Length: 249
Image (tube, rainbow, N blue to C red; front, side, top):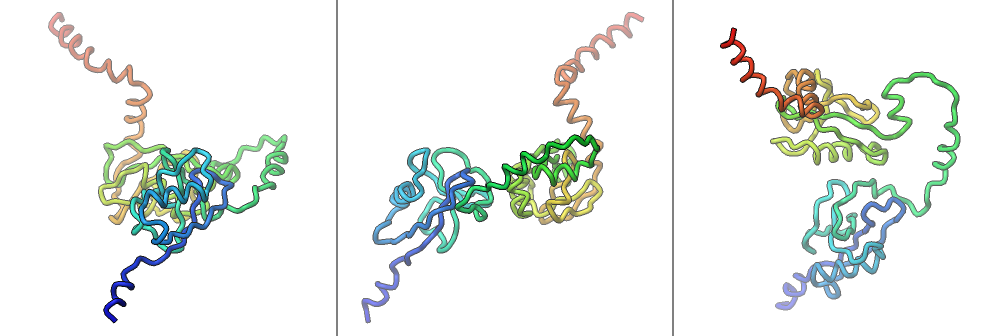
């Protein structure tokens, strides 16, 4: 009986699935983390390197698949979870859970068929759903002094609204933390990826309420400051000349 508690303290064996960072055609490999064989995190990385056959060399980092958080300890691993193996490069966002063993062949046919001679002008929303990618400009809720972040959302990210919010969270830094919602400039919530429109402006909102501010009125100022930087630098010198001119008159 005295030996039972000691035996119960040994960590349980965990099985996780590991994908290659940024590889949309690697289906992932099961990795068994047995405490008797894998006692340190470095030994785990060595085991993962052999299992996923990383083309970049040794695996040096493990990331969570959605937000790209770095896993640093064996205790942080959860049984049955998914992780992304990488070298020294940054985390690359993909919908890893939907990667299959077969490469999509239908996309080649889809790329050949759109040889259409029609010149019909369509809306930005229709183009976005066809191209399966979207670029939006996102303001920070309650802060009109911060210019909008221009964010390109890949086609595979648009399949999951949670992944879209995760991408926006990485680009827009709210004081309250993660981005929970996207709203139009007048406060209307956007609930799905299909509601997003190319080159439109939105407001990133966290746990707080949407704050109605004149976000759109700040766009010309910021764009002028970015695109016409030489003009903005020349604002101060004319002030001295104008004062001198008044003295002469």
